[in-house]
Amino acid sequence: MRALVTGASRGIGRAVALRLGREAAEVAVHYRSHAEEARAVVEEVTHLGGSAFSVRADLARPDDVGRLADDLAARWDRLDALVHNAGEYPRVAFRDLTPAEFAACFQVHVFAAAELTRRLLPLLEAARPGRVVFVSSVLAFSGSRHGAHYAAAKAAVVGLARSLARELAPAVTVNAVAPGSIDTAILAGDTPALRAERERVIPLRRIGTPEEVAEVVAFLNSPRSSYMTGTTLHVNGGLRPD
Ligand code: NAD
Image (cartoon, rainbow, N blue to C red; front, side):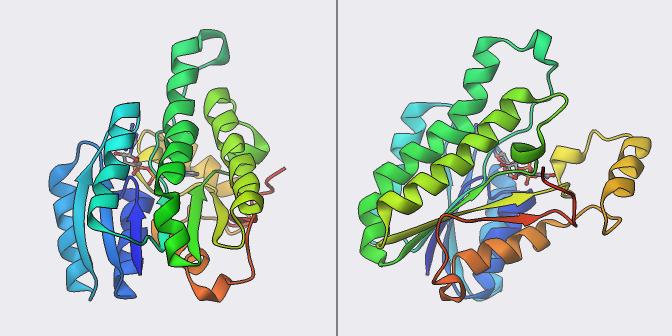
């Protein structure tokens, strides 16, 4: 399996790269600024029985998105798995949210993912089936108290996945995962009180791990999910998504 995982130097993306490495995948480990961490992921994937290389691109920059697609197309004639994971959760009160912040959020989570998919379509179609997985969020369904632009972008991702599932079938399957609270840098700013409050409202009473999300992403990238397209799998410890 040949897979591109965006934002794979840490967090959920790293866990996905390692999980695919365990299945002997060839993994393109995309990163923006953490070159050292990306190199470490490449080594770990290799150690687990896969092979990997790292590739840099700032998905906030449309030129970089095109270059990333061109780099992949120059190396590979087939792409089995494309995992759209990169992105931040910028917390901003709606009354302070600028149009530029709104646009920047959509650029990374939605526009970059759509354009990368579009450019890599010939490679995905060559895989027959190519598989695309978008990382959305429980906040696409519940809304966010301090990230309206983020929740809106993550909801757009679900609409995009459902649309591409229809339009690209049967050559390409397109699904999404919607994580709840997962223990990564995104939650690093939590106070102990906020973390305890998060855990209190999760029926399984704990924050999830990146590996628990990676397991579901790996499933959606495998023949084990061969009859699934256009779906969103919730990985949230039982949080009600609506
Ligand atoms: P993380 O901060 O550890 O990882 C995010 C990755 O995205 C990093 O590697 C970062 O460099 C990359 N990235 C961000 N902006 C980028 C850009 N402009 N160009 C290229 N790369 C960029 O956080 P994470 O929790 O692992 O997040 C992974 C995905 O999961 C994100 O899409 C996030 O929205 C989503 N998510 C996370 C949670 C959670 O609780 N952690 C919940 C729901 C959804």
